[in-house]
Image (tube, rainbow, N blue to C red):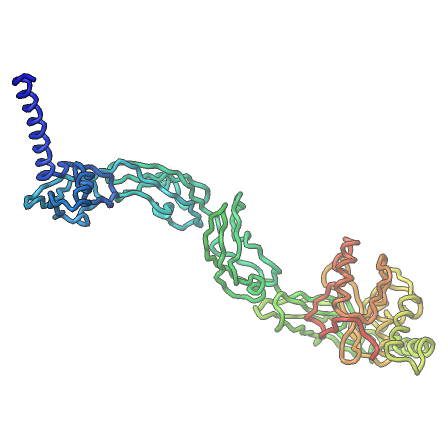
Length: 497
């Protein structure tokens, strides 16, 4: 090999070695990048992320070759990674300060997670109510479009949400505002059996449902006058909104006086103004029936007026008047009715019969021996009984009157019951047997089948009335009566001991 060639090879090798040593010296003395860029929110930087060749640095550390003595002076915890900008990060490298410029940039748009909002008319809402959360590395500003269209009126409104972060990135999402048209205060009459929560809506709205919240008993509130705070929940799709509205239960209806009719009184004969007359009210208790017969002279023939009055707890008043015809006692048939009762009981009963057996014979006599014609004189039960015994014809009042005469003659206490409601009156007896009261109705009833209203309790009577009403809609609530107006009754049929 020539001398020139050898010299050239040596020179190249020397140059490579010098370059390697120069580069290695540069890496040792200035190992850091002059600038790095990270996305906002990335606060997991390590010291090695600042090196030009972190692999060489880590290899030297692994082999315990202390060629580089590098220590981070600036704490990364002092860098606001949620705020875009340029920040100087200083290191002490082999005794000298090196600086890397850290750029925090925000290039990702915010993520808006929305929710629908339900409010009642008159309520206010703010843009933040429509946001479940906003996901972004930097602070954001929220703007809402569409809220200005809501001016307290009910309806469904589209709300556009716009979020802008510190990097100027924007995101848009659309959600809905449901404004419910509700009644802030609802008045209801005492005696209302039930009140659907939907009654608090001014107008029906598709997809909207109002429900009472748990532990609120609306039926209990309806039983007493007063003002109540009613907790409700509005359900729209999957959205729920608790709403507190007001309910006032008021009593504006006067008592109802029933059974008032013109009466005939016979001088010297027993007489009751209250027979067949009852009073009911939508607020139980405290409602009494007062009879003003001060204008009637029971000892002188003539036509007089009697007044029935009642006032309930709320001060509502009711009054009804009727004529009382007073006649001479020789036209009364008290004696004739007493003879009919005596003769009939001797014919149909025996001394060794039980009380229920005697009552059963009375029931069968009235039920089978009197023919229903649909008419009777309802002015006096004695006269109705007299005509019933004499003609063997009449209507439900006749059956009641004949039954009353025979039952009383047999030694049993009984009173009259009057149907509540319906297109016509209906009368039957309540009998006191062994300190309990039982229903006793001898009037035939078409379509009743094998049913006998003989000494039965409230439950049997109600069950029959319900089934009979379903089969005969014209006779719905056939045995409906104002329960509070009569003595407490047995629940089930009377039985022998």
